[in-house]
Amino acid sequence: MAPLSIPQSAMPVQIEANQGPGRSHLVNFLKHGLAPLQLSQLQQKKRRLAKLLPRMPTIAEAEEDKECALLASSVVVAAPPWQPGQLLPSGLPENLTDPMTLASSPQCAEAFAARLKTACENDRRVLLSWLSTVFPSLALSEVGSHVVQVACKVASGIQRTMLVSKLKGTQTVLDLCMSPHGCEVLTTLVESMPVSAIGFVPQALTGRGGQIARHRFGFRVLEALTMHCSVPQMAALAQELMLEAAALSRHAYGHRVIQHLLEYGTQACQSCIIQNLMPEMPLLAMDRTATRVVEKALDHVGVKELHLIAMALLQSARPASLVDVACSRGGSSIIVELANREVFVSEFRMHLAKEEPRLAQSKFGRRVIDHSAIL
Image 1 (cartoon, helix red, strand yellow):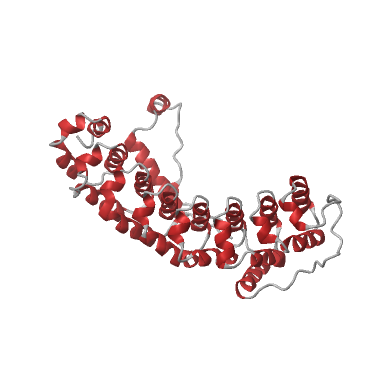
Image 2: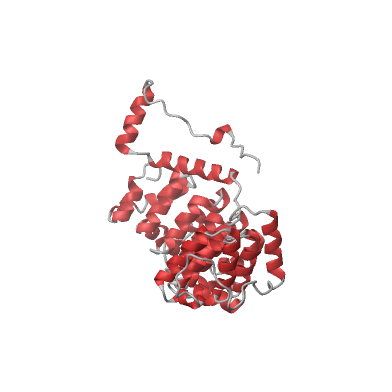
C-alpha cells in the first residue's frame, strides 16, 4: 500500500513557546484553555484531515484469505479434518475430551485459549477443527465465548473460513446478537475478519435493524458493522436505520447506532438522517438522549446539513419554539455550537434578542446570552 500523502495545510502548526508573543499565547492557553471559536476551528481542521485518510479494511487481507472469504459466501465448507478419537495436541488438561467442557470449565477454557495462541500451524488447525464442532454453542456461553473470540483472532486461511461458516444463518446471527456473550463474539468477528468475510452479518440483520438497535446487546453489533463493513454490505440495513432515525435517536441504545452512522456513514447517509430528523429537530435538540445525536451531527455533517439543522431550529414554533430550545440544556449547547461555526448567527440574534428577558431567567438561556456572537 502506498504511503499516505497529507497536504501541508493539514499539518499541525508548531508553537514556538520561546519566541516573542507566542510565549504569552501559550501561557494564556495553559491558564484558560481554547476559546470556543478556536476549539470549533480545531474540530473543523480535524474533520477535514479525517476525510483525507481512507477507511482501512478490518485487517490486511492476503490473496488466499480473499479467496477463502469468497468461498465462504457461496458454499458450506467441507467437514473438518478432525475425527472423533483423534488425539489433541499436547499441553492441554487431561480431562479435556469434549469441546463443550470449554463452556463450563474456566480452567480448561483458559488453557485451551493459551494453547491456541502458541500452537504451531498444524496443531492450531487440529484445535480449531475440534472446536468448530460446537462453535455456535460455545459462542453463547459465558466461559466458552472467550475461547471463540480467541479462535476468531488466531484463525487464518481455510480455517478462518470454516469458523465463519459455523456462525452463518439468520437465526444463529440473531441469537448471537441478543446474547450478552454472543454479541461479543460477533463484534470480535466483525473486527478481526476480512471485510469480504463478514457480509453475512448485516445480511442476516436486514429487516430487523430497528429491533436490534433497541436491544441492549444487539446495538453493539450494529456499531461494529457501521465501522467495519463496506458501503454495499451495509446499504439495506443502513436504510432501515435511517428511516427510524428520529425514534432511535430518543432510545437509550438506538441513539448510539445513529451516532455511529453519522460518524462513519457516507455523506448520502448523513444527509438522509438529517432529513429524517428535520420535522422533530427542536424537540430532539431538547431531549436528553437525542441531543447527543444532534451534537454528533454538528461534528461530522457538511455545511448543507448544518444549514438545515439551523433552519429547523429557527423555524420552530409549536410544540417547542426557538427560545424553548435555547432554555434547555442540550438546545443551548447546540445553538452556541452553531454560532461558533458561524451558521446563521444574525438570524439567531434577531430571533432571540426580543426573548432576552426570558433567556435571562434560565440557567441555560444565560449561556446563550453570554455568547458574544449571539447576543
